[in-house]
Length: 92
Image 1 (tube, rainbow, N blue to C red):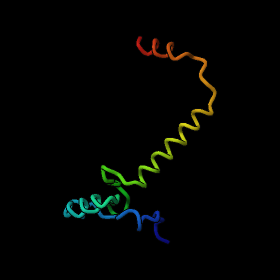
Image 2: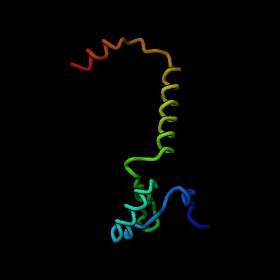
Image 3: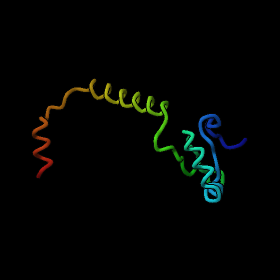
């Protein structure tokens, strides 16, 4: 059996470190198109390069994750320590 790899074929292009070093413009074109690039070294994942501007899908996922975290925090019991006390303690 081979190594298990996530299904990245549609969403993410995978290239070797050697390709990144020899053909950086290729990576630039891919990321400019809004797709992330996974860089591998000897077949092992090394980095994921993502476009700086992101995509609408990335933005929607980020907003959903933030909403989940906020919902979780709002369900928790409020702290018994006042905010003013926390601020005063942090200034010491």
